[in-house]
Length: 126
Image (tube, rainbow, N blue to C red; front, side, top):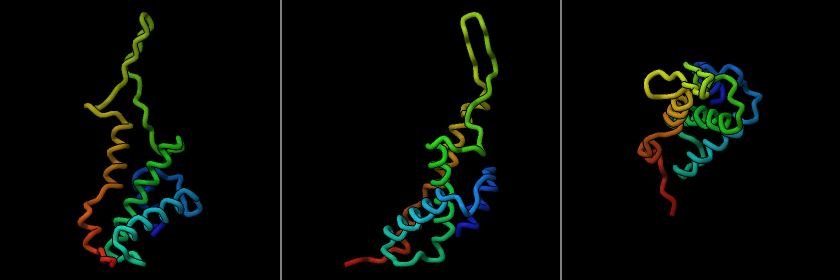
């Protein structure tokens, strides 16, 4: 599972991650535990593994961003216009979103899922 998470992170442009990253192992265990708790199963079903991989990648990016260790992404907008007179700085954004908003949207897309996808595999506990 970690191999596919690393491939996804590399495809998104985050090249500095590898199997030895302790954050990645921590997030993987956390996501697996969450899915197992939601389904009341002892082992993750094969159909939920792609979801777990996607959620792991998204949560990994969120944790790295919160810790200020997100080296692979530029989240600050470039200065478009600088005036010295009354100190005005305008930042360049393409349309209405900043790079940080786009990163947050990517993280949300990776970490959120349709609960019906999880509950389909749910086992009732008495």
